[in-house]
Image (cartoon, rainbow, N blue to C red; front, side):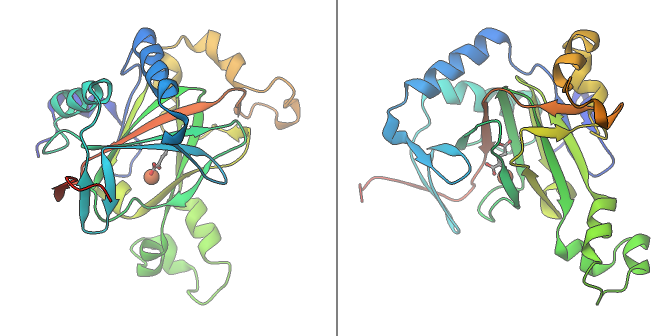
Length: 259
Ligand SMILES: O=C(O)CCC(=O)C(=O)O
Ligand SMILES: [Fe+2]
């Protein structure tokens, strides 16, 4: 799939390929989505130790998706992602909605093998910092000069290696994040279960604060009480974050029989 020309302007960082689109939806679209999410029956929520989630589109198995139609309020988003971005060969057919309290996150992980190798994540409500770290495969292969300099049998070797290659993103409400290629295949992504998150080195810092009015936003993002950290930009999560992870499973079986 050819990446749409206009998307090139939204590529951030140096690892192929991370795309950050600020203000992908407007305020009223955000409100409408949140209304739909919180109108869903309570049984739709699955509570995990560190977050709650709603699964839409069916059940993902290693071999494919036992699909169920997405509701119209979600196909509106998935269709738009498909048509405007040209990254997926079809509209995403699976949406995972995650809700995080300010001190909740998601462990560094790689998305499952059933998905077309690209993820699109729409963020709602509170900003959050997402971290990308190369996973063991990349570290062990010694694909970079840095890794060759570190003894492979050293227990500490993964720490400096990972921190050197890691990067983070500041995900603002109403933004859309897409990651694919190496960022999808060779990196883990995660969110720290911490209400205070540094965002100093975020690869999309300019883009994240630009459209929302840098001057207005930065003092609100930065913890006033964190004076000990000097100029370090630190995000204080004070509200819930809700995200919609929209992905495509190519192998689909319609769920005709209720199990
Ligand atoms: O909430 C997010 O932004 C990340 C969610 C995620 O990584 C996933 O659902 O696989
Ligand atoms: Fe994920």
